[in-house]
Structure formats: C-alpha cells, structure tokens
Length: 467
Image (cartoon, rainbow, N blue to C red; front, side, top):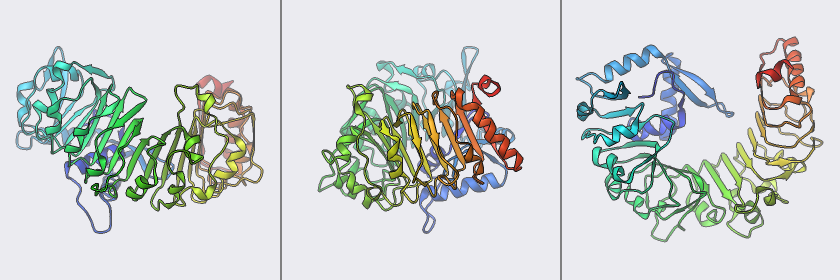
C-alpha cells in the first residue's frame, strides 16, 4: 500500500491494522501491544527493517524491503486475492483504469488524487482508501461527497492531503469507519461525527488555531485515539456519557478542557497534549492541572503555550508546577513556547521516571544554563530548539544515562559541555544551525573515538562541520 522505500510511521501503521480488524485481543495485552509484537516478529524475520527509533526504545518508523513489497503487491493484486491495488497516474491515465477498481478491497492512490476522485470511482468492496501524496489540495465542494459515494463500506480512510471545505452529510453514513484522518479549513468538528460509533482513531488537521469539538466523544464507545493540530475545546462529559476509559491518546486539547472531570473519565490516557494559556492552567484559573497527578498510566505529556492573538513572547511563564504535581509515570515531556528561565530545569530534574525531554520553540530562554544541583537520573534523550542560550555548564553527573542530544537553531550557543563525552551511554549528537557549537561537538566525537565508543555526529549545514 505504501510507495517503494516509504518511511512508514509505526503508530499509524498499527492503528490502521487495528482499524482493519487484523489485530485480535490476546490475553492481558492491549490491541496496540499485540500489534507491536507482530511488527517485531516481521523485523526479526528480516521482512521489515527499522528506520528510526523513539527515545523510549520503541520503533518510530520502518520500511519494507523492496523484494517483499514487490511480492506482496503482486500477490495481493492478483485476481484471486484482490486484496489491494495501487493507483498511479501516468501519461494522462490511471493505472489500473478507474473501471477496474470495483473488485478491490483496499486502494492506495499514489498520485493525482484529485483527478481520481473527480473521475467518479466506484468501489463497493473497498474497505481501505489511502491517499499517499504529501501535497495538499482543496477538494471542490462539488466533489465533497466523492469518497462516501464511492466507498460505502470503508473501515480505514486516510485523506490527510485532501482539504475539505465542508463535511458532506453522507460522510456520517460510513458507520463502518474505524480509522479516519481528515483535513479541513473549519473551526468546528460537527456533532454528527458522534454517529460514527465504530471510530477507534480520529485524527483531524485544520487550518484553524482552535477547534470546537461539537461531537460528543464521550459517547463514541470505541474511540481510543483523538488527535488534532489545533487547540480543541471538548464537550463536558455528561451524566449519560458512559465512555472515555478506552481513550489512550488525547490532544491537543485547550487548557479550559483539561478539567478534573475529563481526566477522571479518561483515566487510561497514555498520551495527552494541552495547547492554550498554560499560565492560567498552572495557576488554577482554568482547568485542573493538579488532577494530572492522579493519572496512573500517563507516559507522554505535551504542553504548548499559545496566547494568540498576543505575541508569543508575552506569554512567558513565571511559574512551573512542582515536580510532585506531574504524574509519577511520566516518561516523556514536551514544552513549547513557555519562555521559562533555565532555573526551572531543577524542577524537571526531579521527575524520577523522565526519559525524554523536548524543549521546543523557546521553551526556555536566558543566556546561561548552570546545571548546579540538577540531576536527570533517567533522562536518555534531550532536544532543545530555538533558544538564546549562550553558555551551558554541565557535566556527566547531570545526565548519567543520556543517549541522544539534539540541538536545533541554537545559534548563540558557544559550545556543548565537553564533559558530556564522559557519559558511557552517550552515542548520538545532532546539530542543526548551531554553528558556534560545532567545534565542541567535533571535540566530543574525538574523545569518544579515543575510548573506541560508538558515537554518531550529525551537523547541518555540512559546511559547519568543516569550519
């Protein structure tokens, strides 16, 4: 289904497998855990190869070997199977022809998706429809019903490149849908989405900064993952809302939606994203940040400070919750646009299970970061981007288990602490537009080489590496 040598996001692949019904419950494992074991088995058999890893050691992306892909494509596309077909546009025509798709159960359009939909395809047996191209295009309103009209039995719909200007009413008749990725230029998710009661994964991309979710997700009993790039305002769980414990992923929601009632209902959350005025949330003026400590399964938390229409710099946080107010199970934390002082890093250092820390888009600001008294006992991955940091003082004592460090757009950073070379586990360093720090990165690599340690250094642009 994916193009040759395509970098496949594992989380997406697993959710599509589950949506198709390929994954069944196995004793004490969740569907996602079972799917991960199936993928690991394919990797161990050298049928699929790992491309990128997550900081927590899980697989982030993978690729299928060309020979296996060719075999699968030939076998799956045979007349006896009709399992799937790739649709390609070449020399002004689609291959295979539009009239031939009616027998297939899964379609992947690799190019010219708009022309394909305008050609009025009809696939009464199609269970999965995936639009692969990365280039977005606006779907004319006259064609807004092209997908639900053509494929009435869909279970999996990945229409990310297709920007809807309105959601057609017949979209809500696709009651078999379990996995859906949609893009639109709307500021609200219509209430009728609640009718899609089989939905397990709902991913919404919008051009709006905010998303008013009128659909009652608490009545969608199968929903496991809800994601959007906007700040989503959710309906409050009602007394007649019976569900929510199935949710594993929720984000990004507004600060106002992060209430004690919501967190109690979504008690099984593993990943949570919050986008909005974090100062009001931390100070208890909206939402209930203190309720997060009761989340016993939460492993990943993204906190995005958004004070629009004010300039981002006016949203500087002058307070950060104490370490005991964060969930004890937290393994990954992302802070974005918070403009915190580096002294607050001592609070984050007390998060005893934290393994990955991402500081994005001026999360921390200030010329000097002195790591006195800080110690990130379990931290394995540190990502810092867009900061005015100039002097960073740290030693191996502060990050005893660090494996990877990524620095992006840290143009004022004079050097990376050379003492980090003494960390036995430190094996990967990436610099992106950090010219002044490049010489110290090369020095760390030399020290690692002397110890015959495995160490990967990446510097962009390349001319910084040789300057």
